[in-house]
Amino acid sequence: MADVGSQRGAHPIVVSPELQQVLREYTKAVMRDRPEDVLSYSRDWFIEKTHEQRIGEYELPESNSDKYNALSGELKRKIAVSFKRYDVNCDRAINSLELRQLLRGAGKLFGFENEVWDFPCGSPLA
Image (spheres, rainbow, N blue to C red):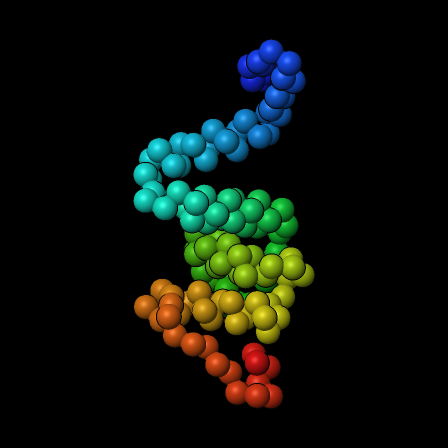
């Protein structure tokens, strides 16, 4: 563990190897991307890091879909990552709240990020 300098009367700050690694990755990203709004960038960077960690922590069961199994390995990997990104509670299913987030995310891809997503009363997505 690194001991980051100490001043008279101050206690040394001990930084764990895990935190050192995260801070190193974060610093490189900030220096590479040079964001105008560092706070918003930082929030988004750490949220993405959290998603990456969560996504990597569980595996999806094998599919019995012939169409899915006929896809290339790379396409299957992309589908799995996308699925896991929205399966926030890691229950291997997309519930109505997660589906709503998925639709909002897909809408942003097509320029609908400022659109209001109102679902009719009684709709499973409401």
